[in-house]
Amino acid sequence: MAKDILGEAGPHFDELNKLRVLNPEVTQQIIELKEECKDFVDKIGQFHKIIGGLIELVDQLAKAAENERMKAIGAQNLLKSTAKQREKKKKKNKHREKPNSSNSRH
Picture 1 (tube, rainbow, N blue to C red):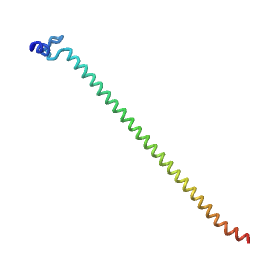
Picture 2 (cartoon, rainbow, N blue to C red; picture 1 turned 90 degrees about the vertical axis):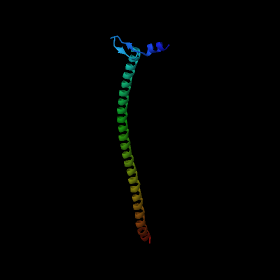
Picture 3 (cartoon, rainbow, N blue to C red; picture 1 turned 180 degrees about the horizontal axis):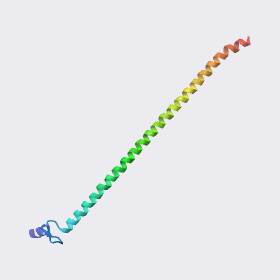
Picture 4 (tube, rainbow, N blue to C red; picture 1 turned 90 degrees about the horizontal axis):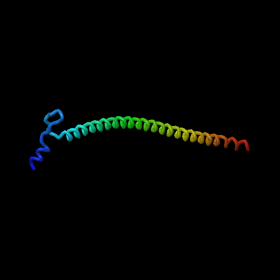
C-alpha cells in the first residue's frame, strides 16, 4: 500500500526521459491553470482601465450638469429679480401718477 502511494506520488519520467516529481498530467494541468490565471489577470487589468475611463467620463458629465444647473439657477434668480424690479417700478409710477390725477380732478 505504501509502495502504491509512493509509486503514484513518486518520481516520473517525461517524454524526454527527464526525471519529474509530478505526474505529467498534473504538470500539464498546472501549466494550463497558470495560463488561465495570466489571461484572467490581463482581463482584469483591461477592465480596470475601462472602468477608470468610464469614471472619468461620468465625473466630467457630472461637472457639466452641475455647471448647467448653476447657470439655470442664476438665470432663474435673475428673472425673479427683474420681475421684482419691474413690480417696484410699476408701484413707484402708480404712486407718482396718483397725486397728479387727483390734482387734475379739482
